[in-house]
Length: 291
Image 1: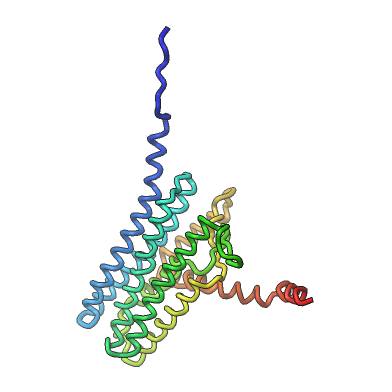
Image 2: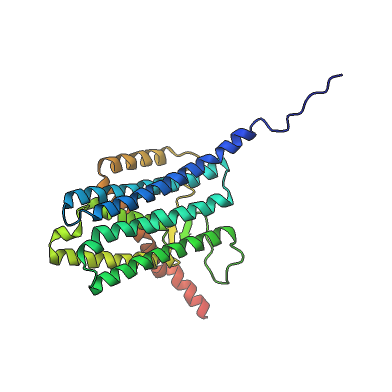
């Protein structure tokens, strides 16, 4: 009697291994976009004073690369969850990619487009701008480290620390923070030094202030909607239509749409906090605790 040979490898094992490459491919695309954004920012800075139109073209492309990186960063997490191929090394690789693409790339772009183009290296405004660029990077790295800690070890956090959930982020995520900076450049790619001395310095100071605000929001404990649950349940035709309509608006009016969307997302955490702070329920709880 012939014995049936047992195949040691399940029939879909090779396919399963292949699925793990999909999230990694999106992460690699994220890194590529950050890499190109840095290169185009450096290239644009070379033409800031000699050919502003050429510099604007490079800066615009750098901003678009950061925007595409946000798309790839969103897709790699969703693909990993949908295919159940999330791994620990994938989580760490994604965080390292975010430091490059949403930390280093936007500060290189903002320096070349704004701070470095407007303020001389000997000025105090230039020193302040460089300091806040570094603080933005550090706050973004801290934000990513805190997110990884809360996602992997939520029970060993110090008492009183805000726990993460699927519906909300704790603190402003670094991708939309970088998206706001990139959308500003995409909206007005001409270097700031082309606006005249007084107006250029005014815009440069506003950018420096914005960097400080974004850094504080990233290390804050304000809640920001994660949108992770969107599309995970039963498909809603209205959500699909909304996404399609939003995509069309971005395609046709990217300069205005991306700036508005990024500004609304960055500010909605602050607005949410103000409304929750002033809500009657919060006041009632405060009164009850005092009794």
